Image 1 (tube, rainbow, N blue to C red):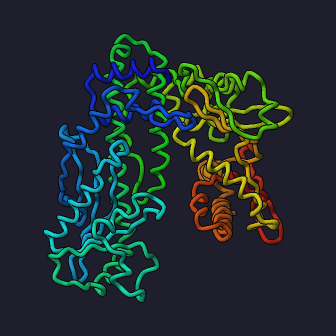
Image 2 (image 1 turned 135 degrees about the vertical axis):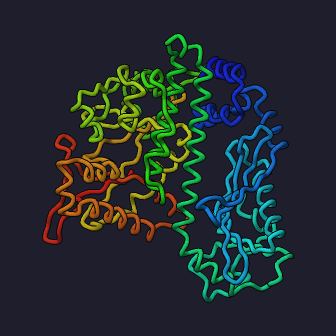
Image 3 (image 1 turned 180 degrees about the vertical axis):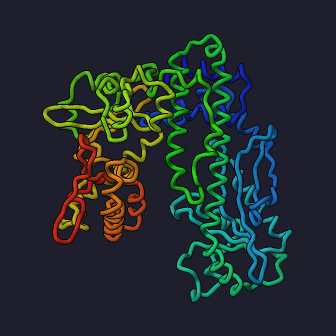
Length: 527
């Protein structure tokens, strides 16, 4: 996005008087916060004059407030960091446990990203420890911060001790990241046996803890979406009142919509979330629903040129137009007609980008323009538009997948041959990032599961043959195989891998391998 657009947005935000958190959220949507490939990253504090000073003032005036359990939350307590204007900058969730001694388990601590590394996390932890001192209770937490992170020692510096220093190894649960804080006010200075009992109780209550924590996360996210939507309505009030829209306006509302849809997909996997009613709190007006979508940035900063990384031989043979204007070239390509779109197309849905509106994205549940087909020298590729903030992870994944190739088994895993499909090219242009991969004869595993469980012509087959269980089990076994052969430092990368399974896209049917051992997948692609 050019400096002109940034200045325009800053002026609009100042004129409407929206809060700091909404400003920061809008900046992130604009891609200002993460210019991943630039040799000199553009700081949001440079783009928006006075914002750094405002953040410092907000942190300086922040206060910590404790909320007691209400309703069905019973044992759950919360600390929140509030600005002087009442905006929430961070929070700490804790749960009361008592097995011989009073104990508070620290469930989760988070500080809003723009306010991190400014001492707020330290302050809320100190407030928690003061609370423990007053309550004459032991503090317990699970230190999941990786040892290589700079914040790994934050707890030990505040006086927390590893549980293994207090309790002998026998009888401890399988985890060893637990840490304990015993205030001076606690009479029992050696509560080892009581802590073991508490840990076993904690294990039994883990699903309930996760459920409440997920509910809190969903509630906070919904509040933020509603707040940002309200801020955009204020910022573009003039255009809305007269019934016009600018590219910047369409871009901002499209970004909000796609982020909301991504959030909706993720929370369906959360423990304790049943879906539906909570997200219905976020509603778009008819005027906004009828806006044409603008899913990619059309702006280029001064003296900016497209940047491309990948396999040198392939990149040299790419069309000149693609290398000179990646965004314009890629966004003019035909959409990838995936199974998710089959019902939409049958109902007469128009997949041409100029015809798609915000309401279409809300109906589909995703942005169909994100994937596009590219035919070159007899090979079919897929371009995927990815969020700019995912650039670092995309680069790491490309490197990891190429390193993974020698580890792939020469034999089948649960009957499937495993192959990799890393990006062969990465393009950055006009604030957009695209990954180029070869098209495989399959679809994403989650899309396959959805088709098996939701499409009428596949439900019966799935129920009788257990195809969804077979698919999930195959992926699980491949992940387990990978973890067993990778270095400990690489195992985390396995969590971010995507899997593609053989599929007849035209017929919308799975391609299966059948032999005397049963039904399985012929191939599994890792991307």
